[in-house]
Image (cartoon, rainbow, N blue to C red):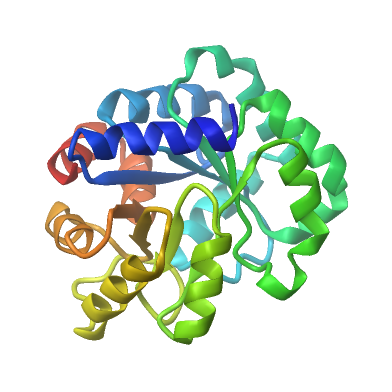
Length: 257
């Protein structure tokens, strides 16, 4: 379980010459009752890992689509505890690694040690905390390391080469390369400097590099994935689930890997 499972799963897919595709879903969007069904569906579609978002009242990294999904989730009274309990209830059915994306405030309120214990119980393999900078991450690293839970770091287009080097060597599982300056959300195109940035990050990183923020088509996924190891797709997956278009999700993933 944990970091080893995530590493092994990604390494296996890469050994099969597959691009890594990590879909993001908002836990509780439409109610928590659909979480098991959605995760098992994405596993069947060939996801390399699944990023499960925790709704939060002040989601600074999220664009309108994921903000709206978070609001719908909160309207269903979704809590961090409820999500962890739900994930624990079907962990034996999963083979795909699960990565939780949560802001630091709910984790701190829950209690870092208690949260890390609950992650183990829920079968969570990795964690992304988008508002926790390197300089502050000591508040969680010991608890996660003791339980072998991967802490996945984010690199930005505006990061210096030195900072990317540090992020790449600290990141576990994979390095999340943010490809826009701004929040998440569907975009029709990417700036030309993104290619150079991804190639630079890839050269510096000892772990797989996945591009994310705004990937919405299999063409974008293929293009960005050709400069690194794969993609994270959030807003498009959230939209398609909300619209009930699961067949399009399957097509997007399978065309991108």
